[in-house]
Length: 342
Image 1: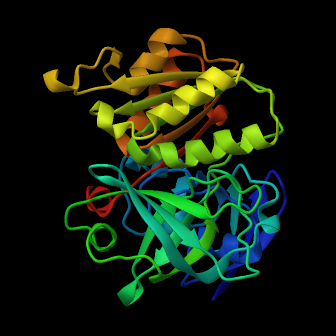
Image 2: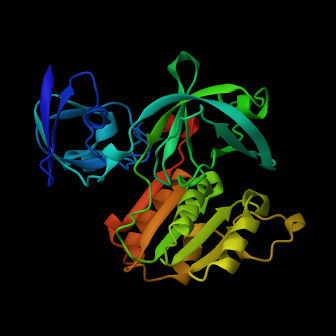
């Protein structure tokens, strides 16, 4: 069966087959519903079902609690329609200007920047370009239909190659290949651009950029894009890691802070060892933000990294720092282990 879906408040409409999710149907129709992981873990696609009936595939309860579901909220990435629907969602303008593509790429280089992090550089086919917004991600298409998602760390401006920051996950289907057998000139297929985590350039609000680990990758793309655009928006970057080595591009961030009058950088380490001789901020990165910026009512926040950091930051910034909930933009880096948790 085919169901008819209307989005409020925009009035946009699209059709949805009974064997696809609401988000997949919206993407197919070019309707810009917000989303991140597409697998029920990050809650970026959460909206409300105003009328009609849906059921949800497996998802994490922290992304959609039973109480929220009872109130009519839905994760559109794993919601199947059982009738015509009216839904309420904050749409993303301009998604149709960044068409989804499937394309091959060649591994141009693999550079180890930390014991467990590499920068993977991709070369696209001649005369091919991927139009994307700083902060978005691509999905590698692997054997057996499996996919792995990585944010682009390179800004979309000019002709720079696409770079990705990849952390080694023990036993990981893709990262074991990257850190073990992958070599330059290997061919990888991917689909992109994906996700609605990108800078909202129609705002002049000061930006709080919050990253943990390789969540720095899309933040780097955002900063470099704004540098290219000669933006004068105030930017404050808090980058957290367990140990100093996790802040694998600390020197670049310090360079930005020296050269850009509107940029401030605060590195935070949570589990430094004596041998690290760490003299900087310690503790959880989002708590460092709250100590320095107790009033976020006039800010936009862009947070990327581990789900526990993203969830904690949103909860505490809204509840304790007066951040408007609709000014928190996030991309939680979910792993297969995250997806298997209830």
